[in-house]
Length: 386
Image 1 (cartoon, rainbow, N blue to C red):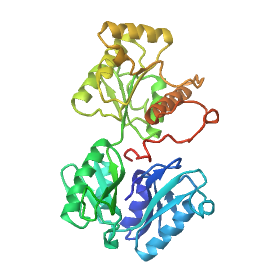
Image 2: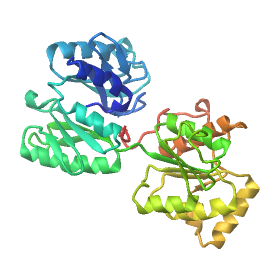
Image 3: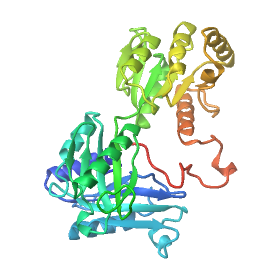
């Protein structure tokens, strides 16, 4: 299952390599104001140590006990935790949410493909893992498919089910999403009885930071903290060095607009990509924003500068032919109003705006808002790829 495998991969791999069995609990579905999204995972090692989390502390004790039991019996279990349960306060889930957690034993015998999946994730190769979590025939529960863009390993129990789940898993992998899919017992699309959780491991989303200034180093650090694969790009080789940006995954010396256009042409930009323009120099940022604002599939485009710089930039972009609809995609001046002044404080405000854009937050103090704390997508959340 291993939805949040990036967080627990080290612990799980060590147990797996040693020939031991770990108990792994994975959030497969959430309702209402659940504390962690679908895909969050927790690993209980043979020595009792714990890695990861399924609820931020609410039900870890109960999942720990269940994981220990599952390792002993060898039988996977799908368990629901929520305030509607009689023992909700006993297990500690008092936030108002509901979690479905699938707990399974993981070893070389139960999950022989884990080593290859670990290699795929570390090499940034897209891979999806589809696991049966409910089925009328208990023998199916825990079976899995490992789905790549061009090959499949494993079987759920029938060729019909394998074909249906493979097609759908590839769709989720392309979209970078993890969620529960429902089928008939033999994979019938218009049926029910079998539920399959698909964990998608697309390459990490990208953060492109343009302008090798001190603020860029702080933004790169924040991006890495949030799980982005960070690139810092600047046309000036004296400033664009790995020594100045140790937390960036790569530092590129190139004209920003030329680099972004080449990346888009190569298919390396997708709907999860965020772009932070920190150059605040018209000869760099205007050509760059011309390219960025015309790309249809960028999650966030922010540009640094004063309000006067912003107005001048808009005028130049209009002269270049950009439409008002295209200009409306620009977050400028960049970041939320947190009152920060230092590069680190400014980077936090930029990260906060990116998060708010992603989840639909307003950036207001929670004490001033009502309703649910966690913003949801539809009836229940479906997490982005881990």
